[in-house]
Image 1 (tube, rainbow, N blue to C red):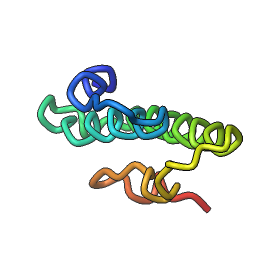
Image 2: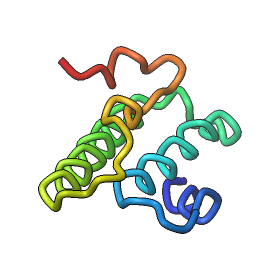
Image 3: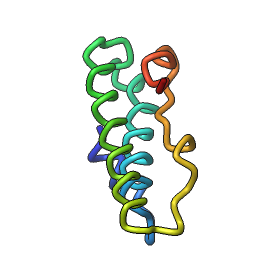
Length: 88
């Protein structure tokens, strides 16, 4: 689903963290269409993707990227999993 999200959400001039966020968020938004939205494994996979998005964001900061959106705008959101994606 995530890779399909890359195809559906691809836009020119996106930073890596933005591209990964949009692809993953698209996948989360479409899980119910395929009956996958209540699978406990999804929580683990999506937490891994959130960590990856955060690493790519931090990489952009280290490379002095000036056009990154606020980091909190790249937090994954999915109905029923809100508490799993909250960063402390």
